[in-house]
Image (cartoon, rainbow, N blue to C red):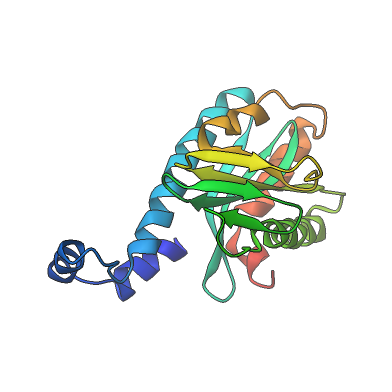
Amino acid sequence: MALQKRLATETAGPLNRLLARLLRRPAAGDSWRKGLAGERRVGAELDRLGRQGWRVLHSVPLPRDVDLDHLLIGPGGVFSINTKHHPKRAVWVGDDAVKVDHGPAQPYARKSRAEAQRVQRVLESYCGFAVPVEPVLVFVGVSDLKVVATQLSVRVYREREVSALAPLAGALSADQIEAIYTVARHRQAWLAA
């Protein structure tokens, strides 16, 4: 939702996008369009997990015009999913940094952990029971994905690999899943996140 709102208000018009493409330059909003496309691809993969008892929310709005890309709730627990779309790029994931095509370190892993802690605080404050939340980074369209062996605090997948979460079980009961999902669907819960 946050990306869609930005695309509607801050992007170049069709003529400017065409001109930018002809000049081989990025147009205003290209990165947001790419991000939204990545989120949609991951969202479609997550929606398939519904058959195994999972609930998914997409683009959960948070204060300051940001959002959670996806929130997955099911038998295996709660997962805060952050989507990164880097088509045809090589990605290296370390404990606290991510490098795309050997470029500068990006704080994706650290931010994913902080986002999961934020989600956990909100859910626990309304649910009245412990709600562990695991951070997940999902990379879309990458040509290569390497994760260091010490990276254990953030789950890292390609978009087609998120189905690996489906067989996880034993973390939450059906009643807990419904309680968490009910809280997570209410906008008011996220206002102070």
